[in-house]
Amino acid sequence: MRRFLVAGNWKMNTTKESGAQLAQALASEVPSENPAVEVLVCPPFPYLTTIGEIVSGSGVGFGAQNCYHEAPGAFTGETSTEMLTDVGCRSVILGHSERRHVLKETDTDINLKVKKALEAGLQVVLCVGELQSERESDQTETVLNTQMTGGLSGVDASAFGQIVIAYEPVWAIGTGLTASPEQAEAAHLYLRNWLKDQYSAEIADSTRILYGGSVKPDNAKELLSQENVDGALVGGASLKAELFIPIIQAAVELSAE
Ligand SMILES: O=C[C@H](O)COP(=O)(O)O
Image 1 (tube, rainbow, N blue to C red):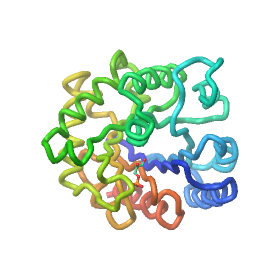
Image 2 (cartoon, rainbow, N blue to C red):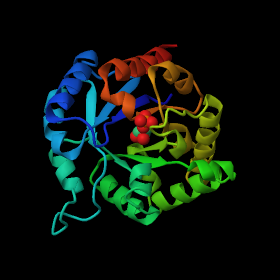
Image 3 (cartoon, protein in one colour):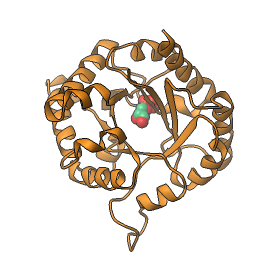
């Protein structure tokens, strides 16, 4: 059985103080590792060390929202995977739709980062997802195939213990629109079958596929109940403990059923 992962992507939000309060609330609610549910927060770079210290020893892990693919050196403004592991990061989100569509990252850029992060021993949360126009023109599976093929090019089967896929339909991110459980399940099933075809049945079966896009306490349980939905990548609702904790609880309850 796949272990649920509930991850909070704080994006470019919080202050040192508000992030610390949020992390404290989460660490006290998730005091130790739950074998059935992994919890992760991904704060902005400047707060990684502070948040890492606060969640240290609790059941909350922490990760970054991006990294660069080169070794430390003359790359002004970038953050290396060595720096992330140095401050204790467990994970890194790569290929988020805001990196793809706002910062214009290509599948090639993302692939370089994926391989560098894997080499560094980080857990990679690779995000894929279609635009509204792509869904409306029946391109969803084509887009997912392109992003999976590009993002995972040259990635060996042996790395899959470190890889999590996040399906995030771009039209559902921060919009209040959520994919229906059926839409989410159909995309997740496509992704699982992709993993089976390109890698193996074992990898398809063991790789977690998260859903992201306006996950809230009132829709979390239904989304997480889908057979191929193994957790959530939460944006807006991860910024408030009173919203994020019930989403974690939904996963805990489902894992006990
Ligand atoms: O990384 C998280 C996703 O972009 C979802 O964001 P959201 O929950 O605010 O829609």
